[in-house]
Amino acid sequence: VVDMLLNFVSPERLTSYDPPSQNLKRCKAMLQQLTHLVPGFLHAYERLAHCHYLCNEFQQALECVNKVEMLDGKSARCKILLARIYLANEAHKEAEDALAQALSLDFEIKTKPIYYVLKAKIP
Image (cartoon, rainbow, N blue to C red; front, side, top):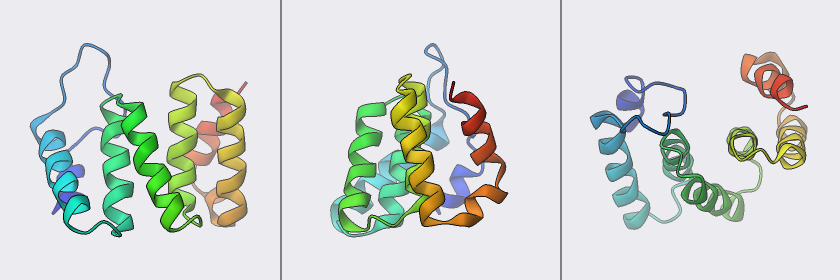
């Protein structure tokens, strides 16, 4: 259900003056309940981190990513999200490291546009 709702949410972060959409708010609420009820559900933590990222809630997004890494440190998707969070915070070295880790975990990352978009944003 959450993945379907996220299809109706913009894939880009909100600007500082944009309020979160109702779909994004619903997704966050459902995922927070789900991660509370099922603490080991990695996909829910990844999606919750993505929702926090979209809302510019970087600290909460990092907490969710850290939880995923603690449970399973082999998530290339999480490393990509981590690179996006670091770039939003202008932590370029950390973003580059996270992108390199994503590539080392999954070489197919190089076939996806997001890899090149993030790589281009790193000075």
